[in-house]
Length: 407
Ligand code: NAP
Image 1 (cartoon, helix red, strand yellow):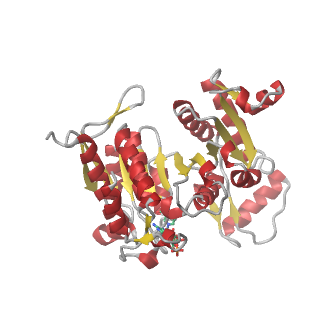
Image 2: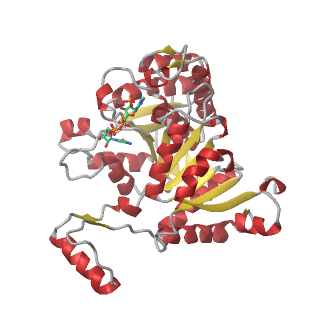
Image 3: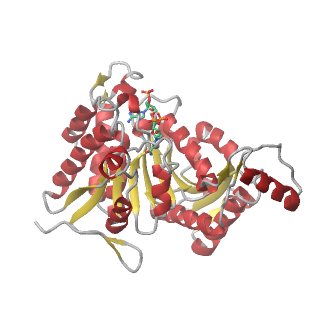
């Protein structure tokens, strides 16, 4: 067996993945160790089953959160960031938010330090899973959420502070708007650069996977320059980089025809955020790829996850230029820590995304099918068992073993 080694990026931006690849892993806090143990067993079994030893993953344990703090006195050691940057693809469990620490959120900090500018969340329905929708099988979307700016930039000043007073004075003097005395103020920066690169990634995915449409979700009717800017820049990127490869909904409407008259054509449209929230519930089949801003994407991801089985099933990846960090999208669920109880699917399916990203799609597909079969056999963890009559409830690790049996 050759030595495990590093991923490199070729001139055209594609990844070169060695057959014996090293991948940093962060088990995370709270329920993190439980779901990581179950997931890792599934990943190793899937890779072995598909490649029979020709390919393998060497997991490199990397520290962040409580474990890092105990070992190094730092919640997010520089060595962790460097390791992910160096090895390019990593996977992590959930991390708690340090109380009173200098870091607002470890997750947000990792995304910003590594410039993981797109948060990618696929949402699909697995047969048998309880859902509040009448036709959950119509949900098959992937959200591309801008991951580095918007209100997450962390530019906020406390009510009654000197900074808030100065900012309020500036706003009054330059913009002629007065704020209620003593207001806290938050800043929402959004750039053409970040909006365009996010849209580019969403469009590339849509074209590569032959998705029927890309929807730009924004709140530009109210926030004209920020959210409205996002909408304008997203369309601009589509025209500049993908001309001739799509049609806008506006153009389509002018023809008087319907999307079914343009088979195989990618349609680009936009929706105001509030409308989008009702559309995903009433007409989910009409949405495929969604490109959106940071805060909108945060809300939308969890709303969509809830429609098809909840956070325990929702995978995610934070992706930049030739670098990616896949993660369970839920938090540390501290009340279940160490109980071997919670659903590992969020991390297992984030692993599926990771293998697809590496170009090891056979592994990703095998994992996805195993999840499909296990849920269809009504073998589930507590979260789904409480909503499913006649289901067999198993522990986190036992669920992982059931997945392995079905690979
Ligand atoms: P949470 O940890 O996501 O848990 C909220 C609830 O979601 C749980 O009580 C549980 O519901 C359900 N849940 C979460 N994970 C599940 C799983 N794997 N299987 C089944 N059910 C699951 O949210 P939180 O309690 O608000 O946050 C706790 C900590 O996590 C905070 O420090 C927060 O900052 C952090 N956090 C981290 C991330 C991340 O690392 N990406 C994301 C979000 C939050 P029931 O009680 O109904 O069983």
